[in-house]
Length: 260
Length: 260
Image (cartoon, rainbow over all chains, first blue to last red; front, side, top):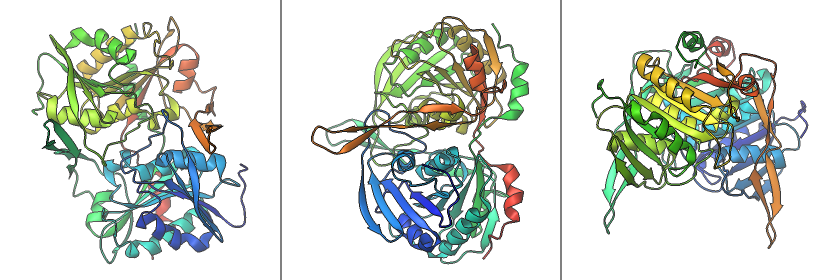
């Protein structure tokens, strides 16, 4: 795989809702005329897969369809596996952009840590490729993506034109609804998930638990946060980085009594 | 669950190698006299689980053993599920510390994004609890953890004494070997995984792929990185944050032509 600028951009697309989800189909239709597209997406839902990789079993992939400027593959692995395997096996050259989505569900705030869509995006970013995640705050399988699609195209065009700094990717979330009030550049909202489990009992006995929960935004009035933007009808663009170092803590730790 | 300071610290422990791994057993033995310990660990290996959560199927847990000051549970979910479910179901009060490990394998540099051990730690941090991940750069199931154990105890004691700032956790990695040259406070090393797939063919035909690869450190001479510390025989302590916002990029994006 050679990393070079090509006249026709190459777009590598994946998601965590699976190759048959409406969101990835809408994404491909929206970006179709921007360049050549390779889709490598999970063969079924992988919501909440985060940055998971598959180490305990082997991975397979197969072609779903091929049209002019578009090839679609499905893969037995995680969203991150999809990007890793596509870059290794399928991409004729380094993609100009890696895109995750459009996710059925909100990936703003702390959800970035659980999101398989953002797993795709962070993996692209780790590989040095400009990467964008698109999500709609609607879990329904027939969600209406139409209000955000012009922004999806515009943001992708701008990233293809400007690139992104090394180590930085974009997490783009849209509120549910027929119209948008515009777009805001945001930071990740602080908050916490509560009441996360629904307990049930099996007919033959024994408790089991479904993951659910309520997100509590601890800074709902802060206008620079992605959740504020979403709750006020704006598309939220949150620049996201792969360096997790808490630099300010490094000096403080040097004063601790850690040496033996 | 009431969050209060109790005279006897409560330690919540999980991992991604599973409840039967040597690493978590060594961790529990080392920290046994620091307080009450609850272990809630996956019922088998979950290496590379990152921050994955289980949304498509229900989760179960069961008690493995109970001794004075120690209760061990196993869980069918991911490492993050373990922490979420333990906090919801098992913890009599808010734990004073959440600990992941000791992982069999290196979680320094970009590996933090794939690590189930760090998934545990980031989840604890998201819940507002001081959290630490411990890892040894040795994948073997009978790895020798003895050189790092005094540091594991010391670091845990210091975190119990000082706490950690909201949104900051610790990623602690130890090099393989019988002795350590000391401890260094580090930042996350920049680098990239290459040659990530080993292709094989099934006896009945059809290719399958095992995830493998080589990590290329792109800044091997930088003495403030965690990989430098590890390659020079030091324990690496990398303070890690859950806010992924790329703040410097926010202003630049405001100059892009993103509005429609």
